[in-house]
Length: 327
Image 1 (cartoon, one colour):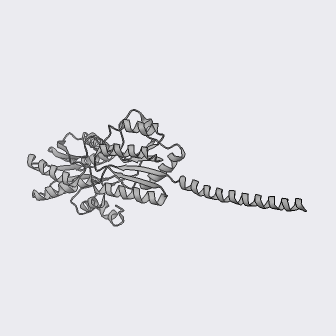
Image 2 (image 1 turned 180 degrees about the vertical axis):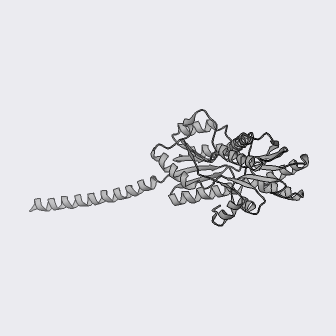
């Protein structure tokens, strides 16, 4: 009888022990699930344009939908702020770092620090110029050379019957940045097909509307005959449009305007006949970025370069696209 009682007590204690273990495991599983949530450190170059604002919104919204813990930093247009932010992300031991580089050079040291810490890096929108391609996992963004070339090709076709020189002024993006360098190259390569197309002035407007207006005012004062403006983004083109109008000229007619981005304000100017052509550069990179973040966190292989699919717009195409434009 005593043996039966002891056995019963032992079984009871064992059941309680197992229940306790099971409760502990359940709690542990919940903790593990919480620990598995991916933390992404993202350094945004700034808020210099409507494109950049749309890009930031896309990244924040997509991170929330993907259940990714986003640590977001606005570098306010300064490379040193981006480097500081990346170092902070390393100290915080985030799972993945992504950023849109202010310029192409000067990031190698901090990228090596991230690599040494075992934190994968994804470049978005803008690339870096480094011979060591192991410093980042992939680049997600546009082919800026292709955008510049599409702009130049349109102009070559538009001016194919020109008998006199066609004077072009160029509003460049931020000096040293990938889009500024590549769009300039693509455009110059394309217009080389017609020697009558001549760039008579080229200066940075820093991708900002105010910068575009100020530089265009200088161009107009220094050059009495301007036939075409090529702006590296819509915002500079919109600022230049104000300067052109203030100078008593008709934008889109007296001076043809070519821009890149295709944000709503730019598309409206194109539909209204104030711009003549826009090459698209989509800012909606958030969903693709979050998928890449998940893949690199798992250690999956990803392509070294992933390009967004984009198009171009004439005035009539802009009118058709505007009602459903997302940005």
